[in-house]
Length: 279
Image (cartoon, rainbow, N blue to C red; front, side, top):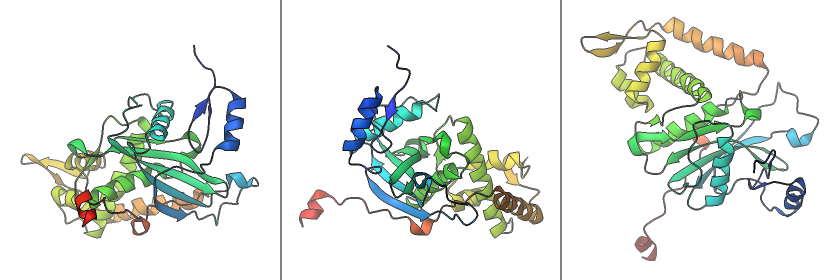
């Protein structure tokens, strides 16, 4: 029958029907965060945000863990089942082996608490660098979606592949991607003073040309001329104003600024061939 409430361990993600079961489990669970490899950790600037009175809510840092779906099958299955509660189009639950998962956590003295994640196909079929992305409701509007999107493109850059996310995107996913694509493209145009083609923009940002055209068309910065899309109406002053307005909003929001820092990411090289290890 239908279960009105489930209790989920915030560390191992196992779910139970009874409160008594989760209380017993909590005393025995040895995990304090996701399994897998820690690849990213950054402190949170709380200068303008007073820490909460309850230290269990005091976020000291954010971390990202890389998990192989085949190596951590049960954990990733539970993660996908939880994501289904918030993503209507989510269809992947159990066949997690072909995927890698990148899990974002908020960290405090008690452990690392799952805030969101994205998954991607290991083979990156059709140049998809992201299969599914989800930020849990209590952690939304903190910049975490954009942070994970930035990581997905950084990984594409490391593999030297121009990529795009798998469609369809959720409504929140569309908003996060539009924000990321807009800022990335305008920042690149500002850096090169607008003297770029759409193809060159794609090579510099690792964004697919169709995503570039869609984004810049919405900003009225593209026109169709002689059978192809070309940049037009590039105004450096307007681009500068765009970023100034965003910075002013962040300052007035009294929230910590979360930005992806590629220089602190740690990705271990792929395992060598077993024959090479023996030599």
